[in-house]
Amino acid sequence: MSDGHGRNYYFLGGEKVSKKVFDGDKKKKPLSAKDIEINKSLFLPEGRVSVQVNLISSWSVGDIYESTGIEFKTIDGITLYHQGSGQLVDVFWDSEKREFDTSITVEFSAAFERGKIEDNYVSFAKRPTKITVLKNQT
Image 1: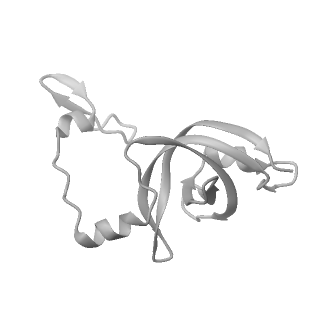
Image 2: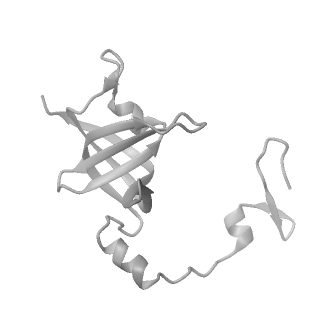
């Protein structure tokens, strides 16, 4: 059913529940040998983890959400990406200079998933939270 605002809701046993509860536990599709090999070279920890990053580059995604793509490098030298809008993108934006600030180190917590950029598999930060500016490098 729809609530008239484009959001679906589900009933189970006469109670309104989330889609996840309604669908129940779904078995995960096992990874192929090729997927396992691809994932070995990516940063894909289980669950949410905290990372400290510096901004390397940014680009306009060009979607209907006016998302920004950002490339990071962790303190350990691991390259990560994020695509979207919101606090993580905003914390790097220097409104006075009207450009992204590459001189700060930021810590955040996120889940990481495999994605593709220009036919290359990469690690994407999903649903970042606990975003903190640690220091300016200048």
